[in-house]
Amino acid sequence: MPPTTPQLTTTVIGSWSVPDWLEHAKTGVHHGVISRRQLAEMHDMAVKAALKDQEVAGIDVVTDGELR
Image (cartoon, rainbow, N blue to C red; front, side, top):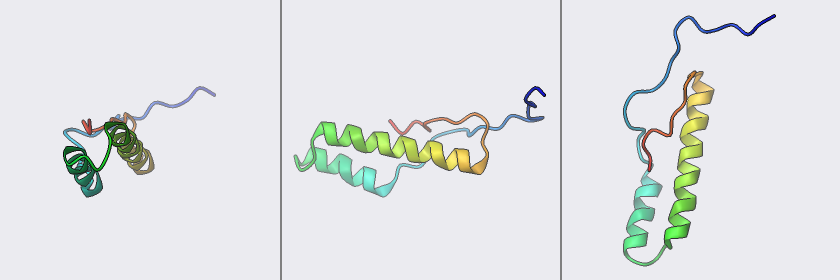
């Protein structure tokens, strides 16, 4: 049996909210407390969390929500 196509494909529009912890990390880079590599890893975690949130919500076309 072929997979069914949803009647109305869903996605999000606009930016995904940046978590407070990521904003604090960006400030940490500015002050030299966090490296750019650590910030990149934190961005990856935020993107993965945004994608997972959308998958759990049943969104058909997920996006990084412009977190970078």
